[in-house]
Length: 297
Image (cartoon, rainbow, N blue to C red; front, side, top):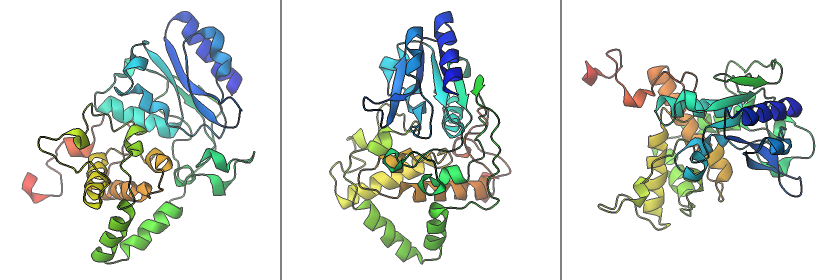
């Protein structure tokens, strides 16, 4: 697959169809993969593809990275789960479909964290999203690398995240509240969750607005709670469960739980899951006479 990927990237850069290829390369010690930005066709040999390619590179298509946007039209190496984020960005008019070339990668799954890798991809080191993935054969791609993946996700979502959600749902509201207050109290306000999320693309985040001061800026329990709850609400109906926020969190707050729970709520209320159709807007920014709430009628 790597040779096909490198050849395609070389063709795109040599022809001038794209100005930069956003993909994965080795770190200096070849122990981890890292995002690479290839602008010269002669350098496409740096591109790699393996189960360590866990980063969601779609974040580099956002306005957070104006230096990358300045390079010109990008091609992006993307797994199906990453493509779902690209579809949301297109549906929210953050990028135009014709302004990005998507190299979809047929995927057998990735590791949850690269430090778990010991040379073989086993189910116990894969994230929950991989066990339930229905886009291992990439959609919304201009070119697909790799043969068709024969994988059917389970009818009922399985994995530790869903088990924990069921456990929380069985508890009383006060117990659930106490759980999240305790978890969010560990937040150190580093905003790594925001920085790795391609759907947190506001040029001025609500945490940086101080007239009025919506959220306390220090790592104080009140501000921590406000920040994490507001971020969860802002992602409701948009989050694709790529898991990057929890993977990046230095204090291991289980952000996948709150994000996946909101995904389930939106699925139940609106029969909607984000990232499958770039022409469909998330439910929180549209209304329909068929909505369940009476106030809309």
